[in-house]
Length: 250
Image (spheres, one colour):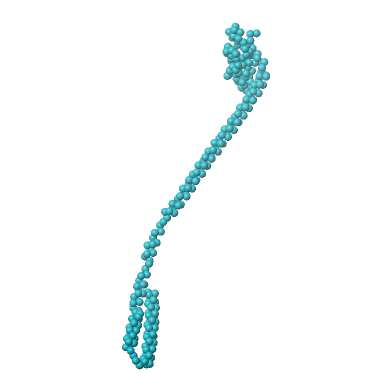
């Protein structure tokens, strides 16, 4: 209301000034005409008519302050842009594309993480397999080494046993040799090499014929060794012996 009243006062002042200027110009005009009438003696009707028309034109051109006031009031009523701004502010819910853009790199990260996990698992499996293979190789090597050591020890023990007990074994074989009559009648002779295991209590086992030219002599040599089980000298540990047995007619 204060703004409308101030604008109304300003418009009144402007119109008042305009009226003053108009009256001032009209007075000057009439003053100049009076001076001209005093000098001139002849007055034409045309001039009087022209003056009357000028006065009418001036009266028509005078501003009307009442109409200006109405225009000012109309301009004040039209200033209501608040409703239009509220309707334009509403569509501010565009967040779907932002969510999609955020989800896509997450899926890629998950896939990358899965790939890394699978690669790590494969690497772990490969390393485990390599470790198992190396362990097996080391176990095999160690077992082979142990077997070799045992064999060497057994050979050494067997060698010592044979060196000490050669004469006793030879005597046992001569005294207990089994030579079949059929072989003697036929004149079958030869040498048979027999392998057998001798335990610490001088028991014989695993008798095998390694070399022979006659089946009769092979069976005879096997029977001879089996009959001497418990008669051989006792070794300190279990040993394997290779014993040659000769068959002749002398």
